[in-house]
Amino acid sequence: MPLRAPRGFIDESDPKVCQIGHPAPPWLVNYADLMTELVCFFVILYALSAALNKDVQKASKDVKEMMDKGELKGEVKIDKDGLKISIEEQGMAGFFESGAAEPTKEMDSKLILLVPSLRKLTEDHELLVEGHTDNQGIHNAYFDSNWELSTARATSVARLLIEKYGIPGGHVGAVGYSDTRPIVVNDTPENRTRNRRVVFFIKSASIGKKAAATKGGEGKPGAAAAPPAPAAGVPVEPAPQAAPKSG
Image (cartoon, rainbow, N blue to C red; front, side):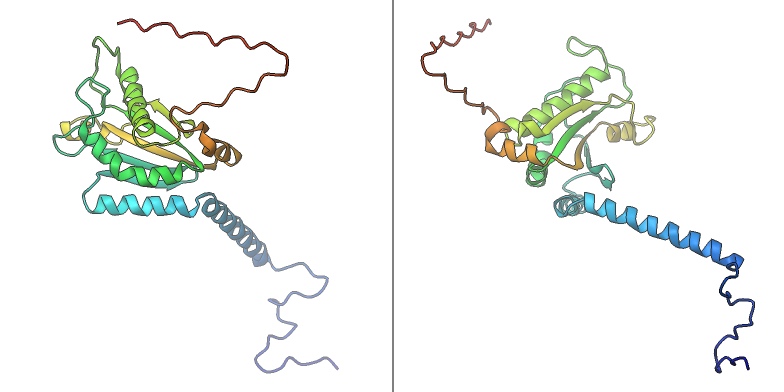
């Protein structure tokens, strides 16, 4: 005598119930695919959150708060590559003089706000300073195009971070993108002002062992490694004298 299903249970003869040795119902294939895709999605989310440590997230929060208060103007973005802090000029005060690469006091005042976060992050991460210009052509005694200008501006900011604020030089790089990556169309003076910006890109990949080596002084401005001691009985040649500077 076959067993009867208890009240509230589906009878085993129901077509929705998979019998042992019988193929699964068609809906189960789509359901299994959906579950697999959800697992992959959450694995990717976990990997992304693991790559961005707490220091990066805290720096992003601190900079956003400064932007909300009006102390900085720009954008903060976190993606799989790292943290990007883009600062833009405010009002008539520019980061650089027209056609020049030396940072102004306005640029220095913005760096003072960012240095605490950047110094903490550069202990274990690499910082890339990006220079961006508008599409107004330039050709003067110093720069042939916006390529040279944007690169020189990024280099000037990187040097300021290293020489004045003590950011480890071995963890900082500079690159210029000219006018090739505008955030808005260069059709008005206001939009061109937004495109003249400096971006601080903190890479998500940790420097690891390299960071430990630079903490001993390699990454500090002006620090140099001590020369190895000469072997016993080997004469030591005098160090070459530097040529006198001209001008």
